[in-house]
Length: 264
Image (tube, rainbow, N blue to C red):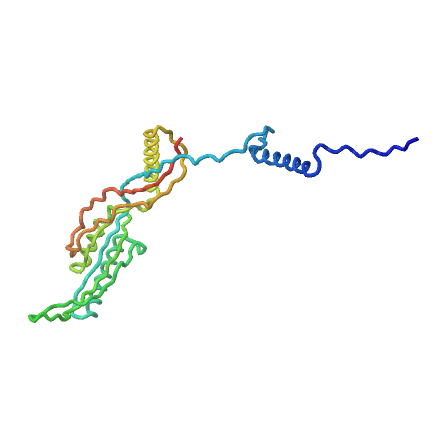
């Protein structure tokens, strides 16, 4: 019996370096395919879909709205005072103090409370004169005091000024009067509402002109409210009487807003 020797295994069609090259090529193809595939994400319902792409920012329109509101005033603020000129500073201050005391007493008799009277200024200045040679020298001193007086019943403003005139004589001064509202909150709110309506109307008009529709309000900012300045009369000596006839008119509030709306 002839012994049988085992046969060596058959060689693989791709062996050695060729087999290694084939494996690398196959792996490279898988990696390349993975890189080229789009990113996928599962939706809440389980459907696989492409990942969402960020949306572009919406178009907007920016406008400035102006609003005004007015109402009759209910308070008058008077600027009144006294002045006195004397040869010396001490005498001028003493005369000013006497006239100021008379002014304050007249205000109290008219029912003006202490909380509505405030000293605005107090002054003492030299008075100069020139001689024939053009040289200046002090010939006296002028002392003065100015008060802000709030009259909460504007119908009493005229009589209050008349009382000041009577009490101070030639030393008295009426510097001006300002009318106002004691609580401007409601007036400012009405002006603000008008400004918002104006801004909305302008934005809607711009949207129609551009063939668009007006969307939501994105942002709004408000500027400072504005009122007309006080009306003042020239400084003049008091001349007695019941006081000047006054025309209070109306107080106006002006509000400006800047609004940004979305365009659809």
